[in-house]
Image (cartoon, rainbow, N blue to C red; front, side, top):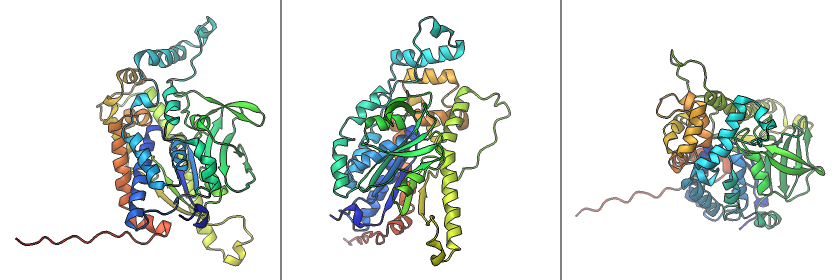
Length: 413
C-alpha cells in the first residue's frame, strides 16, 4: 500500500454540530462505497490531512486512529453512530439531570445568591462523562497515532478548541513533517500529542457541556467548543498542506426557504434563542469562509501563473457536501426518543415535540438528539446526498469513474 504522502494532499474538514455529525458518517460511508466502485478497494488513506471541530473533531480523529484501513475505520464509526443512545454521550437519568440541569436553571433564575449560601455552582447544563468512556473504546486507539503518522499513512491531524481563559482560538495539531505553528489575530496553532482531553474540549458545547482544562504555554487554560469564535474554519487544513479540501457540514450551506412564522408565534422561547445561537456558532462562519475561498480562487484565476508565484495565495479546490433536507425538521420528528428526564429539562426551555414548528423546537434538539432513530436517518441522508454526487466525488479525488456491473438479463423458461 502506498503511503498517504505519495498522493495529492487532500484534506477533510468536518465541522461541529453535536448529534448532527451523524450526517458526516453517512457521507463517509458513501465515499468508501464510491471508492470501491471505482476499483480502489485497498487504496491509501484518501485524506492525508484531517481537521475537525467539536463533534467533527471526534469523527476525524476516529478516522486518523485507523487511517491505514479507511473502510474499516468508516465501518467502526458507522457502527457507533448507528447504535447511538443519549446515555453514550451524557448522563440522562433523572438524578443526574436534576444535579446538573435543574440546579443550573435554578441558579440562572435566582441569581448567584444561592451559591453564596454554600451551593456548588454548576458547570454545565448536562454531564458528558459518558463521552469520555466512549472515546476510550476501540473507536479511538490514540496509541496508534504516532506510528501511523511516522509511517506516512497520515500527514497531519488538527483539532480546534476555544479558550475561555484567554479568548484565543487554538488549533492543536500533530504532523509528520516539521511545521512552524501559525499565529493570527485571536487564533494560533500549537503542536501537541493529541489526546481524548483535546476532543472533549473541542466538543464542549457552550453552557451545555463542561469546559476542559488543557496545558498551554506552561500553564493551564479552560477550553470549550472549537466552533466558538472560529473565523477561518478552512485555515488549519490549508496551513497543514492540503491542496484541496472536502468539507462535510451537517448544517445548511445554502439555506432552505424558511416558512413564515405563524401569526401567533409569540415571544421566542429560550430553546429557540439557544438553537439560533448554536446555529450561528456552528453554521455561519464556515459558510462565510467557503465563500471567501471561492472568491480568492476566482481572483487568482485572473492572474497569470508567472505573477501568481509572487503571491502567498494559491487556489484551493473545495467540495462541500451539505444536507439536502433541513436537519431541524428531521430532529423535530425524533424529540420523543429522548429520555424523559432530558425531554422534561428541554421542555422547561420551551422545546415541544409534535408541534410542527421546526425552528422553535428542532434547532436545539438537533444538537442533543443522540438517539439511533435520529442518527440513522441523518446517516441515510448523508449517504444518499453523497451517492447522488458520485461522479463529482470521483473527479475530486481523481479516481476513475465508478464501475457498476451490467445487469444480467433474465433467462427464459
